[in-house]
Length: 216
Image 1: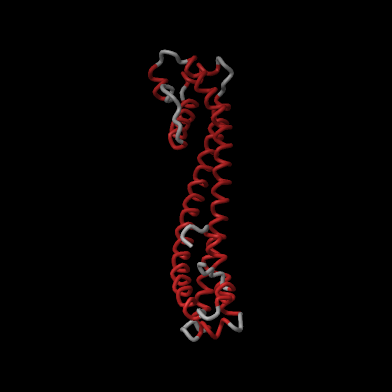
Image 2: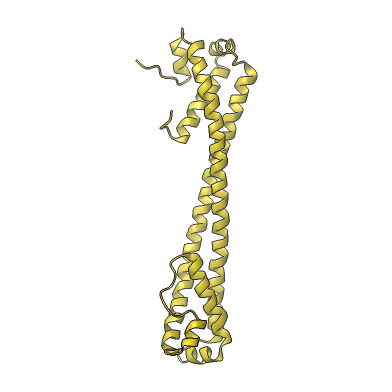
C-alpha cells in the first residue's frame, strides 16, 4: 500500500476493519487469532481518528488558501496606491538624500511580503509627519489625508498577512497530527493483514471481502 493515496489507504482500512467486525463468517475466524471485539474496535478507533484528522487537514488547508488569496488581493490594492506615491515622491524629492532615506525611496521594492510591508510602513509612518514631504507631494495632489488613507490599506495587508501566518501554522499542525494518526493506523492494519492471511488462508474469498488481493 506504500504508493496509495491517503484517501485510498483510509478506504482500505475502513473496509478491512468493518468487514471483519460485521461479517458473521470472518469475525470468528480472525477472533481465533487474537482479533476479538475489543481489538477490532481499537483498529476502528484508529481509523476514525485518522479519517477525522484527514478531513480537518483538508479544512485547514482550504482556510490557508483563502487567507493567501485574501492577502494577495489586499496587497495588490495597497501596492497600486503605494507605488504611485513612491514614484511621485521620487520626482518631487529628487536629489534630497535625507527624504529618500526617510521614505525608503531608493532601490527596488521588496518582493517578499515582509520586506514590502517594512518599506511601505516606513513610507507611511514618515511621509505624513514631514512638512517637506507633504509640501512636495501636494504639488501632485497627494494630501496628508490621502497618505493616511493609503496607510490604512497597508495596515489591512499586515492584518491579512497575520491571518495567513496563523492559518499556515494551523495547516502544518493538522498535517503533523494527520500523519501521526495515519502511522498508527498503518502499523495496526499492517499487522492485522498479516494475521488475516493466516486466519483466512482456507477462505480466499474472505480475503477479497477485506480488500486483500492475493497475488496470482
